[in-house]
Amino acid sequence: MSALLKKYGNESVVAKAYAFAKNAHKDALRESGDPYFTHCEEVANTVADWQLDEASVAAALLHDVVEDTPVTRADIEKTFGSEIAFLVDGLTKLKTLEYQEHNKDAEVENLRKFVISFTRDLRVVIVKLADRLHNMRTLKFKTKERQERIAWETAEIYAPLAYRLGMQKLSGELEDLAFPHIHPDEYKWLHETVKDSYNSRIKYVKKVEPILLRALGEHNIRPLKVDSRAKRYYSLYRKLRRYDMNLEKIYDLVAIRIIVKTPEECYATLGVVHQLWQPLPGKFKDYIARPKPNGYRSIHTTVFCVDNKVIEIQIRTEKMHEEAEMGIAAHWAYQQVRTRTGYTARSWKGVKNRDELLWVEQLRNWQENFTDQEKFVQSLKVDFFKDRIFVITPDNDVIDLPKGATPVDFAYRIHSDIGDQCVGAKVNEKIVPLDQELHSADVVEIIIHKGKKPTEDWLRFVKTEQARQHIKSAMRTKTKKLQAKNAALFVELKIVGKTREGYLKDIAGVFADMRLTIMSLQGHTDPRKAFTTAFVRCDSLPDAKLTKVLVALKKIAGTREVTYKTGKE
Ligand code: MN
Image (cartoon, rainbow, N blue to C red; front, side, top):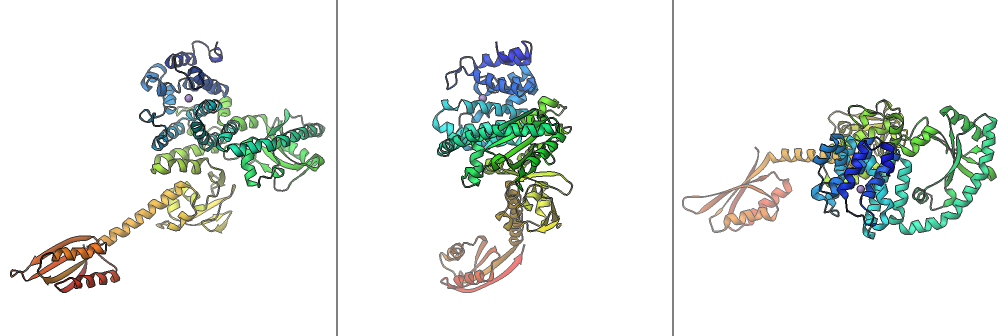
């Protein structure tokens, strides 16, 4: 019997969804040759392991039904109600686009639909991540080209998304599954190079542990657990790139992790560690006092340990540990927060580290106002999923931005009006240039001047697509206004010459040659048909250009006289 049915019972909505999905996918097979339904069951098992609610588990079972079988959203709604129907719909690609998987527009549209759904209900993203995890674990059955495409998408979108939701364990696993497909050579090299170092490091940690435990015991600290954590391959690879591929410089290749009962004990433990071994200056990080933007809490310190070897030590409580691994999913397991607005960022007001979910709100607002279809994916990657810094407003709100962001990016993140009218910035109470790179924990204040407009120069240094778009649209309005002002001015030329065939055509030709647009051209011939008078109107011209036009018109065969006047409409 299925573990799901055992856990939730035969009368549950999970059981109902189980039977429904199994029947809908009937004879369909996966590339592996397994019945398609095994995929749905695996995804649901993961969601159940993460201890999400029954609606999420049911949605996991049903997540491919609308996309891959004749069942419609309306059918789901009729059988399971609107809540589950919404979750399933958020996990379903757009029907009309489903056969164009390599179509870039279709991919963007689908991603966009997914973002809309999950910013309304975060359970959508969690089920989607479980889906992606199983697809990555069974990637070997796909063609090489598809493997690569799916792996890149995982590394660039889904793993960072999991990280931002605080699901570090999942994020790390997704990255490690993608790594051999996106950088095969580097993966092989790293695998070979690191093997021995890993083993000797783990042996070393085993030697350190008893010494540590004894010292803690002398201070009446009995940790719940002391173990070691080996850095994941992909995260190690990224770090190595920053350290000239020098493994010696990676102090957290294997880190010691101490789990204690309370936050107070975390600090007491830190004291003991620092008494025992000298800390490396500048390497101490207190993410308990100041959690990372994704909610991560822990103390990290790096010390000169036994045999004077450098090693990183992480100290945290069990709850912090669970949250560090499971992120947002841990909140469900612990708190079961639920309000009438559903599982959205808004309903998290009671949660202590609410700041960590503000970005979901920001993401929702951003996507609602984002109009440049082509830039959507790029912007999503950079503005929301790239390496983050967090800076602080004078009101002590935490704003998160991509690494390398400037005060102008900050200003636009606060509000487009603040960005547009920004004339200066203070960082930690000092005036700084607008292109200065911000760092985590900077307190940033924007100085504005009413009615001021952004300058093109800003495009040179802003990091977020959000700022870029606002600046560009402000520039466009500026140009339009200028054009409107110019359009009101015109020049009217009066040309008198001998009447002949083609005379007006020659006059028009002068303007065409100079790429000037004629607003109107009128010709009059006197009763004796001796002279023709032409009036030509066009947009006002710079003096130099006007002179050229006059000269060219005078050169036309038969021209006697050219005069002009300027006017306003
Ligand atoms: Mn699926």
